[in-house]
Length: 329
Image 1 (cartoon, rainbow, N blue to C red):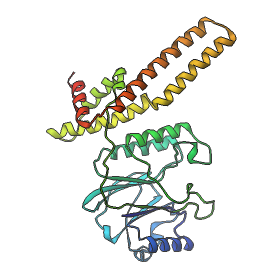
Image 2 (image 1 turned 135 degrees about the vertical axis):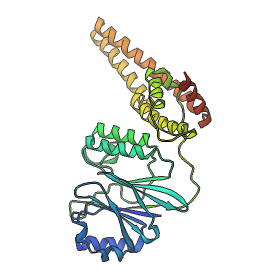
Image 3 (image 1 turned 120 degrees about the vertical axis):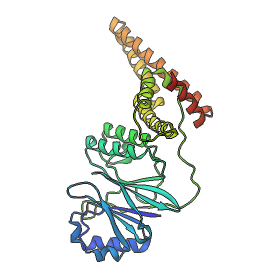
Image 4 (image 1 turned 90 degrees about the horizontal axis):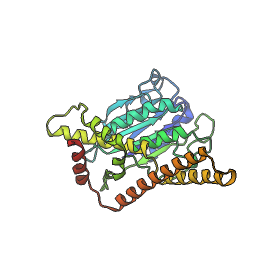
């Protein structure tokens, strides 16, 4: 399965159309997402799309859609799962297995983006294989951009990827997609998926350090007491899925990067002790040092538990058994 995503900025332009036709002729994509078409859909002849073997599937939920999704004749059964203002998610049968594909065109405003992240987190509860691609207008760090970086935006993006259990795939070609401020200012993005043996999703692992926080049990009780749509044994299955997602998000928000927390706590202690060494001892500095040492001791214990747990083989059955203990309390 081949998927094409292109922020083309004006599909009505003859040069843009020529480029798209040439690319489709050479790579024969099964799905095409056109972003920022900058024209009315009806202004483009249906003959143009048929010449590439494409049929229209849908667009994002905006007054003037900024994303058009097309499928090849081989995937006539593709259906829209969710049309959001910043993404369109479709469901398609590939090699006898239902897959979901989310085409993303995120807002440049990190606050507006949170609606996108929440929507994707809802989709992540499905067991179907899932491909998410597009223009996220967010980066994980300064190494991924040549411009300024918003720490809040990076943190939000990191939390979303963690909670959704998404893995960044290796790419070939140019690192930065933007190529200038002309009519076509983004490179095309092409994703090729081959049928094969999947290693499966990353296993969910219970972390012993979680029980050190009172909010952990509160979170478990809150999720377990929530209403779900399934009945019978399906209730337990659905609640466990919801709990795993909630714990992934909570783990990142509460503990973050454990190794980084240890480094920061060490630096804070050294800074305070350096001030004491240069300016002398005082009651205020004593209180600051005591608090900093307590924080350092806490994160070191968390790091120790994390490393010990990482070495152990902790499968899903062990996790379920552990969770049942807390659920029944």
